[in-house]
Length: 427
Ligand SMILES: [Zn+2]
Image (cartoon, rainbow, N blue to C red; front, side):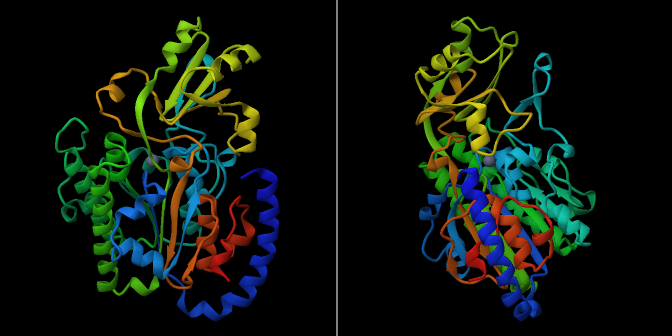
């Protein structure tokens, strides 16, 4: 995970890649993928595959294509990891460092709201420069609004011309006994949107975010029947989508890539970090700012970080680790937007502003730590040129360079990614 190892691996594999491309690519020019779809299943931890039957579509694609368990970049949360997946670089370069950031302490916490926050080109930018029609079909509207694309489909923003072809949207609310059903229906709606941007809009490079497993996993936790059902619901959608590709004669020319932005861990103990700091004599907004992001909390302090403060933070019940900016540098997360300190919660603890969400059982799942249940995700490639193989080791930043390689796009050499082309794809 650390920088020198990453660099050595990068240099070594770059040399291998040049050799592989020279040997391998000319023979496959005839069967390049004309359609590339990158699906991020929000909050699908790597072992959710065990919820699926042997004949599930996800498992069939995994067995037929290249599949392995990989790692997201830290912090294991939605915004930052999506940035890494879509750009092929770590958060210290793409700039989405977490859920919130602070520029001027007096202005308080800011949102990453707008297209300019992602500071590296995404795969859709690269595809657009090549003249491809791009689309982003996203169950999470916030991420959708942060990524440039030709066509955007989220529940609150989609082209008028698609209105009559899309199923009616279920209400998007967590305050309903039917919300599991609604979120599964919402995932079905996202797949309907995906089909429409292909057939009616001619999109050829597409990002998809599937929100159900995350939203339902947060509410019920990773081991609940409701969460399993959202995983099965995704697999039914995937089966239906594969059939759609076959019916449209697109299956043999589609590169399908499936991953996730983070996992999910079980939580049942609130960690009220604001209250703890206030009890210690720190004033909120005056002395400190805190952005809570599940199992991680980002802290900015107006004054210098002393040894005494660090030691106090380390000794808080429920805090597993205190990451300084030096640690963030090692983890490739350090950016001018980074906090002074990141706290990681112990297992079962989750940072909260008020105890109710956890104590009343509204929240049983969370993510954001460095532990496997939050960091490990599936990485699956399927389509023309993809060998049947097991991917042994990967990080989500490897996805974009690997897609460029599989499409034989020369930008894999000219753009400076942190990720590599996965060696299993050209062995
Ligand atoms: Zn997420």
